Length: 604
Image 1 (cartoon, rainbow, N blue to C red):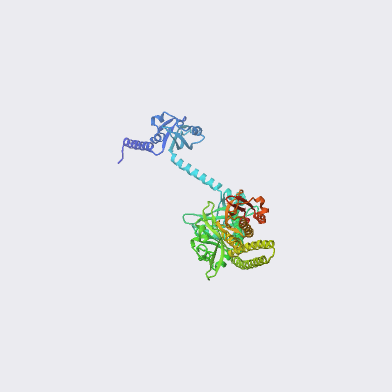
Image 2 (spheres, one colour; image 1 turned 60 degrees about the horizontal axis):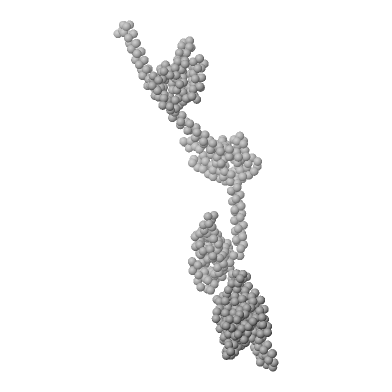
């Protein structure tokens, strides 16, 4: 059926009308903003999206210029390029810029501007399509900033970082890699990591790297020597890892390297020092071992093994050389009283303790323990070092010495007693009163010395003697020589020991004072009561001193007249000076003679 011409025209117009309506709807609701602008930038038409992006109504936009909403810093560039479009220099340009929305907020948009021209090329109007890229821009800026940060971190890291291919060729290096190797960046990028490795260490590192390229998710660390550009050799610690694609194929390797030369030298020096220290401890004749805070052994020398008769297990054996210790007197020592045990419980005053250790074979060894605490930098107790000195030879020497000393004392005592007997016999046989008197004094003095020697002999000590035993021995000797009516009593005696050097001078002093009191201390009834005291005091110089005092009931005397009264007092004065003291005489309901003296043997 053929339509009349009028009907065909109507159909064509209807189709055109529908197309225009569709284009208008598409124009209005497209997701990008669209604006038509004249040569001055004035908007001729805008769509709804343009209004939404700018935050302005259609009426506001149609009465304005496209450059009015631009951010001031972006306006000049867009204007310059739009003028070129209008004049025909360009037909199209794209730009990213900021606009200021009606509410004052600033957003980023991406704009494409195209010229619509007549057939002659004359400018009719411009079409601007734009969309909001603020979020995209923010994400891209963050990514760019993160990348810049990563690049800066990579470049200025305190350790060397490099990327290498499967052959070990350097693809990328940072500043620290250049500093460690001494090569410029351009020089390193022409080398492999194995070119700068010491020849003796190259094969090991190369072999491990080749295995690594074929094994995904594997890394290794190696310490090796590196040859710098200047020929210097340094030690480095290298951690090698790989980067692979999603299929696990090798892309490139990452090598992180750190100069450990100083640490290596310190370790070598420490090992050398430890070796010297161990050699020193091994050469010591004393047993030495160390423990942790729980008492578990961490080190021992061979002398300790020889002393104990067994070898401990390091880190687990709570070793005490012997689980059976005895005190010097032979009584068992409880474990809690062991020197090392006391030290680890916080008692610092445990050095120099003498004990006897029983070995596994039953033999006993006398020893002296010198435990010392080990502390960390905060002062916390972390262990101890114990040194045990075997004193078997010393004990044997002391035993031998005691035998000799006992023999010597025995002979001296016997000789003095024999001399005393001879003097008494000579006294009885003497015809002259004067001779008998002299012999009597000599006999009594020798008897006093014999009594003192007896005290030293019975004490069995080469260093000191008991003061009370000494007084009783000398007084007993005097009683035998005096009239039975003369009483001698010890009223006070300190519980101290005096050095053997004081024995003979002090015995003779006491004898002379007792003799003087016996002669001149009578109470008129032919009787005498003599009191003896030996006390400890402190002199004006703050030193320990001792006072021997003899009191009687006699009338007393003046020391200045003593030479006329008794020559024995002169001997007392001389012996007192020998002991660093002096004789003092007082009258107080009788006579009181005292000698204050020092015991220099105790002071040494």
